[in-house]
Image (tube, rainbow, N blue to C red; front, top):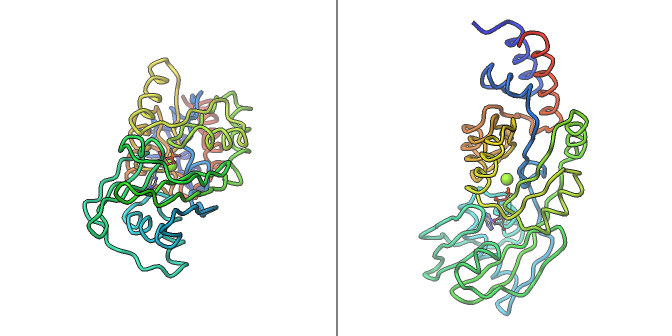
Length: 285
Ligand code: ADP
Ligand code: MG
């Protein structure tokens, strides 16, 4: 049977909002030496707001209408920001057909009989689309929108770093744990966020399979890795880590792939859970 001290520790962690799915994950947590963190929705609130819109000739409302019509089918935090803004502006949306999402890149769909592309620069380059007028803001993620081969414009979306994130990362450092920010977002945004947080390493522009390959490589090198994420795009990396940790507000796929779920999305609670695991190890393991 599971020693009482471990059951007690799992219970204590659970009361703090950290659900550990088994005693062996508590044991792994006690020896974690590397914490890999996803950006959007993990170290940021993931409820970003539109910072700036740069529309081509067809105008801002048409840009928002087309982008939101496609994004209403997406669970991504960027999608929520675009759809929320269209609703606020009282814009009626169209139903997209042939919706295809490339995680970490963007969406191609048919709207009113025409192909629509909503995504990042890599996605536009892949489809050989011209990059729309630049609406880039430092620290903001730029979503590009095109209909057919027409650039409709860009939507710059800014996200806010969680209040407790920098403190949690400093606490991990003081415990001798290395931190890595691992994101699908572009280098510029990743660096702005990573520097504000004080992480040891910043790795940007990673597709979901690259995220999991990176984590798998660390594990292969003998590191004990906790990966913290929220998205569908993080699920393979959560599975590849020694301990996968999902944000409670994350997608179902992330919560199912994880060994630990942070109900209150509180990164400080995650640090506390590692402390509980270390103390328990000192007693029984
Ligand atoms: P993170 O790793 O920071 O959580 P993702 O891997 O989910 O970010 O996304 C990486 C990038 O892919 C985003 O910054 C964005 O440029 C693009 N992208 C992903 N999903 C969407 C979407 N639904 N609409 C537009 N762009 C998207
Ligand atoms: Mg994310």
